[in-house]
Length: 164
Image (cartoon, rainbow, N blue to C red; front, side):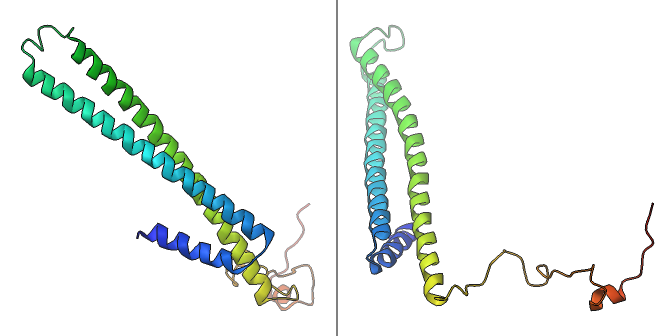
């Protein structure tokens, strides 16, 4: 089991703990996205196998057919060349579609993480006393009102004359 699968299984278990409509919709969204991803992955594998088989067939034809390089109008050569080209193009398209869909699955999982974290914060701070997180450290988040002359910081700053 890969790290991604372990994290997904853990996230699903956390989602199942709560029996709310939002969690059910989120779980259905994740399950549908994973089913679609598995289907696309199977299509990529199938097209890859067909592409490899057609290329291998062209290689065998090059060895077994006399005059392969002299006259490439043999029906098998045309068939396997077309099959190779078509399956290679489909492989590239399906691979791109799979990567795009993998991004959709990751976004659905990220929505699940956000939902669980939001509910965890609500449980941890039930009266709306959750701290506001700004992403700044406490030293950078300090705001000093320099306009108030009674503040200790304003008293230690040198007085500047107005430039007019």
